[in-house]
Length: 149
Image 1 (cartoon, rainbow, N blue to C red):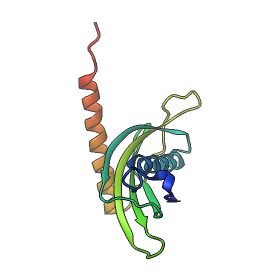
Image 2 (cartoon, rainbow, N blue to C red):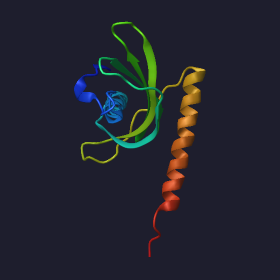
Image 3 (spheres, rainbow, N blue to C red):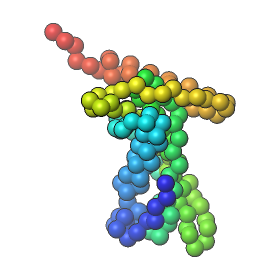
Image 4 (cartoon, one colour):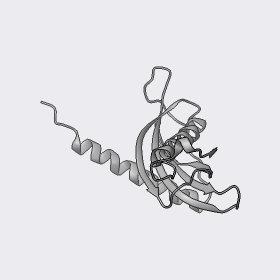
């Protein structure tokens, strides 16, 4: 997904506002998750969001998203953001993020997603790391849940 950054996206410093970049990341991740699930998907977590360098007004921002993991109903997507100066051709890796989405059924509740076919060593590494992160997040949610009387 590529967008031209305009003055309306600028923060008081004259760079593109971080929130504008975050919105693009979530859009790209959501599209990726929806295409995998072939169902509407909702964002449930931003697992990580890193800002490496500013995006400038006039840059073309490209978000590349890919599924790292697909569980029963959840999908982890990684998004890499690059900014290109269209006048010089200089490209900079500006952001990386990992987000978790859940596929929604017709009733608006979580529904099953297709499994992910991993073929390369890089895909296996990403899949296993994502599975471990999601398992740990699940354990933390369960231990933080209030006890029932």
